[in-house]
Length: 415
Image (tube, rainbow, N blue to C red; front, side, top):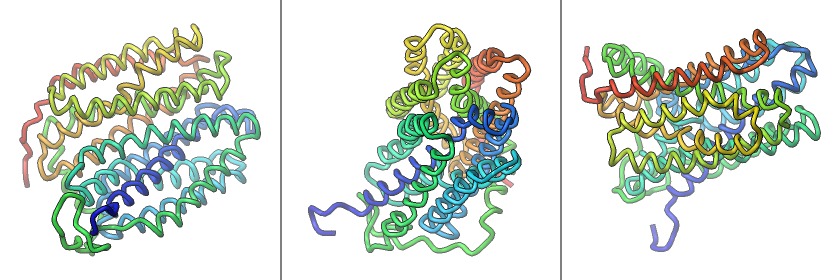
């Protein structure tokens, strides 16, 4: 590469960032449509919440397998197919007439497609294309999830209010389709594909294409991991992490605010504030994880999250200023749990850590799915979200103490 030219790794990182940003925005959008679906179709809140739960389950289940799919078919091809599925699935929802169609389209199709473009993909790109600045790139790509919410939620909330939910869905469809030619033109699977070394590294041969079953290896790793106590502690605390973020707040904050007379646009703006401070919190957490015991960091993050979530019903009654304060505290540790969890996973599982973290991330999304449905059900039963939010706060405090029990030393039982 000639001096002064931008290394192609930065182009790949930029394309991946945009794809991850869009994927995060697409997946979380359906939470804005709970109230419009109730009005248009007469569906109950727990029925719509079930579709969101299916979305989160499918999203999470893709995590352990996305690396295997990339190794078999390549990141570029996987991203193109996933974006095409998102575009088709979102477009078809404008014609749906039954709730099972929402389950199939936004639950299964869009959940699986966006799950393929998620945290595991960011780790693959950062590791494969960067030797220097690998940590920085990993952090920036992780921040794309918050940025996706920051950009899409307020915009789509305004479109939904002004023009209806179908117009907002068409925006998702068009954005996903527009990403496809960008990925096709600029994305590459390996530095060797463009005759380069990873940024800051030496020239490497392209990784060989694996022709075996891409779904067998994750199960082999899982079989070993479940014998280790730390796996259950990490997966359990991350299950609660998903419960208290994607499930309780990201899915139900907007309809809960609506119940208290707060408009969808204002509520989505509060979520955007969470996104802004999430970027700051995740970056600072990465820096702290290199200097502080990750278990102590997790204790602080989960404890603060639990206290703020338990107080959310009061904040909803108090007004906008209190919700902004909630957004700041909640945003700072929304994704802050990821760096300490990743480090503890690497310490405990060594070479298997990447796939093990995929399963732990799957647990995170299963927790989100459980909370998304249960919070909607509790809203139907009790006519408010008090039990859902306070119960989530209590679970987060339990996760704080569970984090202190993690050992974080290699103790994997091998077959």
